[in-house]
Amino acid sequence: MRYLHTMVRVTDLDASLHFYCDLLGLQEMRRMDNEAGRFSLIFLAAPKDGERSNAERSPEVELTFNWDPQPYDGGRNFGHLAYKVDDIYAACERLQAGGVTINRPPRDGHMAFVRSPDGISIELLQEGAPLAPAEPWASMPNTGSW
Image (cartoon, rainbow, N blue to C red; front, side, top):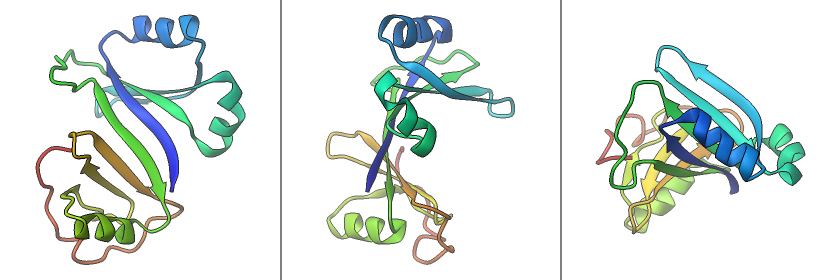
């Protein structure tokens, strides 16, 4: 398993970039603007993590800016922790056997979401190429929020 990023939703992108980059000292590593989804993702890294961020896309902070204003209450501005795993199906099996609900199953062999006992959303991403779709995951519906 490898730590990837922490996602934080922001309401004022300029103010957030000023805080994280100009004041805190993080560096913008890459940006993705999604016109269809009406959001931007900005990935930041500490200066000493810049080379690793460029090579591995970790460790980073992901700022998510939704173009249409949204209120973020109840901790919705904090998004999730993300980890790459060697085998997403085995990881989900182990978690499910331990009593964890798979909120967003890895139907695509690539991504899943679970929640910690305190309700923190955890994203699991398959290391390398997605695995071939497999049951029971391929037909499993989402459960709760993720």
